[in-house]
Length: 470
Image (cartoon, rainbow, N blue to C red; front, side, top):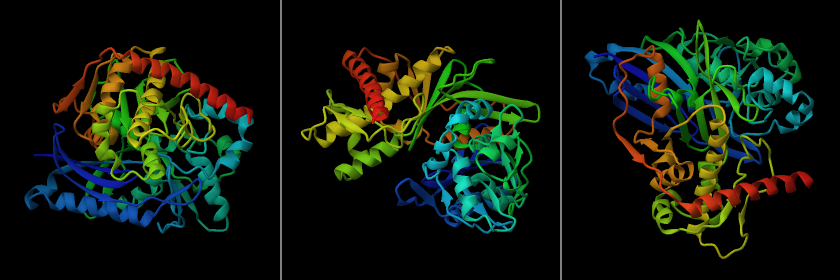
């Protein structure tokens, strides 16, 4: 039996998973990693801890195979958080923390580039934002400007160097999230590097998602696919993506649908699906910054212990929650702004923790739905597939089905990114079997939910305008 190894390095954990040639999971290991916020707008991780966690997960997963079968792992795929960056020396020694995708310390630089925002959007497929890598890389470069042979880049590039020793390289999908990639040429743009005050020489060489990334040290397993986590999640069902949108619900929520040829939607991201030596395929992507992170925010605000464990009961019991104007982490698509603080409407102190929690869950559903409606103006979508940690909430999936009017299918397998990168690493086989362990939610009429959604969108627009006025 041949096996495929997937390495999935996420915000809160590193995972290694083994799949057979048909996409069945054979084994896995999860190693948690810590996230710290030393000050406002700064979100960091320890790159050494991340690397050790990946190595430990890989070792444990491979050692769990019978010794005679360990030589049957024919390919490996690596998927990582996108927009997380760091600096390191030519010998691989880290020179900085890993600055998380959630970090916005580069916002002052971004504010000075507003006159170039349209040109940056056209070249990169991304709106000008401090969430992407360029402004964070600028911050690191200024800090380490006298460091000889400075290496700067996405987390995936740092991991690849240490896992394979294959030099200073990065795939197109992670490179795109640096906001320095010319998506027409699939290479770094000198113009963009100049605007962000960065030397191109310190950046890794750009490569297709599918290709030869060397071999895992100690195991001699070829690494044949590297991509960002949401890009990988799109491929978790193999080639079965027609008329579908994928909603991945983690710390942030991401809404993905195939981008029709010749269409570019300015309010949404243009995200690379996959690239090889022949070219690239593209996705429309909507972004909700405050998904799981909004629930974490609430748990901290209201001192709610084990919030996630209580949500299933609360979602069943609460039928008329307040509205929550969810600006946690800033508003993503299609608004792309950082309005005033989040707030509940009506804004009073009589709401119970249960009502406030359900309001936060509904706000996530509402933001996802608004992005879906924007996508449906460009391409037909007749069903949704959901994945990620928050998708385990039946109440959330039920609300999404009722609000969108579309059937929602949840894969009861939270490893969408790992499964997708394994399929890519395997060469996109046609006999990859769809996951049969799924739960379906058929849409039902829910007029109060529809009314709350319309009120939410109206109030959010007012909230944004008031924030701009001040």
